[in-house]
Length: 402
Image (cartoon, rainbow, N blue to C red):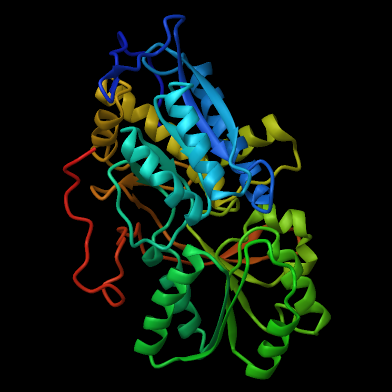
């Protein structure tokens, strides 16, 4: 692989949490948590993400582990429920004594876990695009900030001549805040907001929303639905004669696995904005895709959150090696000092605000279930957690506590 994660380091240093020693196990292993939704409405997206994280761990172990220790993943099910995520995160840190945790998807799950990681002085690697407007010294945010996914999509839509925009999302933190930011930029650009609607996470009844869309006649729908709600939405839109070739849809949470699970014919022609597509060129991506297919089947597909989860594990390993310890605070400080590294995403690094510098892409779904890249940013985009137009004067500042 192109990522530089190989070679053994010397002895492992003990880590400290809340004054109690949390060392790697004496049998030559070290535990990490893998916490995703393996059941519930988000399982369609999070099970493949867990698979990618476990692939990274297996590859590291095949090369000798980290600091000479074999990595033992402790897998838990967040069950698509924020309170369950918080409970399982607590268990992983307090009972299983993991040195770090990889996981989460929805912003609700992340926000439920955040106080756990702060209280227990541990570190979460969060791999999914989100609404920004948050900085914690206890979270590494590799997923896109709004200026790396949502705003490039809006700029692209404006350049295509789409002036009337309908916002549709699941009713929780990410869609609400992302759309607040989008509305500010829609107004600033002189575009028209033709509608804004939300459904409960996992909701399946879109009859009234489809009727509203028919009445509003937008030029494009920006879709922040999550999980299997997308199946019902696209089916009901198709039944009303509004297929993606007739009414463009730009989604922020549909990628290759969702397209495969839903059926590419239902989504063909629709758009999505991400920082990775399986179709990207490059040796690092080709190696990752090939390794994933070997482990999980020739028909398996990969997507943006999966690759971010994979890269998170690799970045954690590099940071551990650089720090010479599994201590979460030392690992965090090392992670933001690593600089650019090659990855399936291209060149990436963590900025001082603990968010990832990465390239933006827009893809159009093809009949074979893969995305054709139709736009990319000129280079890696620096992450801006607080949108200046929506939250003027706010910034992360220095992380002085852990």
